[in-house]
Image 1 (spheres, one colour):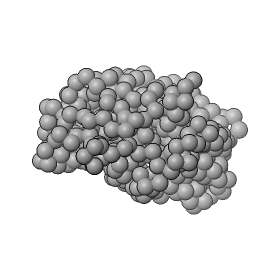
Image 2 (tube, one colour; image 1 turned 90 degrees about the vertical axis):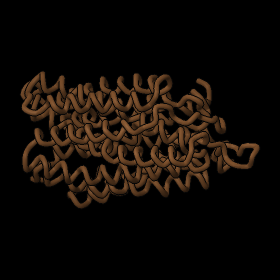
Image 3 (spheres, helix red, strand yellow; image 1 turned 180 degrees about the vertical axis):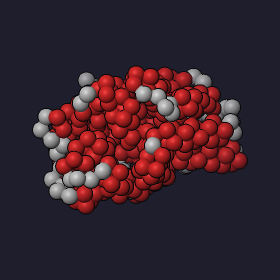
Image 4 (tube, one colour; image 1 turned 30 degrees about the vertical axis):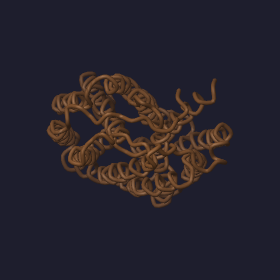
Length: 406
């Protein structure tokens, strides 16, 4: 394998581990900790909130440090720090202790999105497919959290579901350092400046009004889509237990069903990435929002196999939408500021995600999942209406400094 492809695969592996480790607690709380600690799932869910706040808030300083110091160096910090925090969380003996562990884990998990995505799009004239492939790895991490945690609950306990990914993450950190040691030693591998003295800019051909409109739409849809993504991703194991549990029969089988839903839905991300490189982003965005709206509207009251099928439908819409916002930012952001802009995007996204956890708990305890599906349908409708205001043609992309291409 070439060094460039190894770098690309390590970036993707980081996305997988980032989402896997941050969602282990969701399945553990639903299927094991509620029994072991004598608390309901609704009582345990709020202890995940500090971790998701950290996941968002620390994205901005992580992006700033990466742009000022070294993006590759920050990736080593991400892998090793995430792994150590994950293993430490496994030794929690109370809800408060696991909340502290998840908070520290969230600090290191926050590094990935601004830094990994900046490395991913750097030097790619057409980044849609690369972002989509990376997104698939992230989505498989989301799905594997339920699968791996469910397996260890049935075969040894929930603590191993934190320890094993932690060990793997540290190992990847050491491998990443070995592969990228020259860039890390150079301290900063950002794109070179253009002949005119300014850094090469993506979206430089757009006027100020267009960029302002794009920025408002991007950050508004970031907030709404983040709320939808986190609500259904976090709740999916419980949704399947409630709606399909009689067919599944065990925690492991529920984990497998969740994994299969996530895995098949991830294929939509590849189709979306290819479409972004060929068609106007507005058309692609409107399509994914329409899919979400339709399947959320169908879900209330369904049980059994029909509930499983419709769950797959709305997850296709949710996951298919993931690369679009990152693609739009890649078109707009200057290279030397890109990690910071991605950081700002994820600060907003994960602050909304942190708010989604108590909101999810409140909606579920008060009305059940049917009200959640109707709320998500409304959010998808708001995304569709806002996307109508996107320009039909995006600013022309201008290549920046080279990134190791896959």
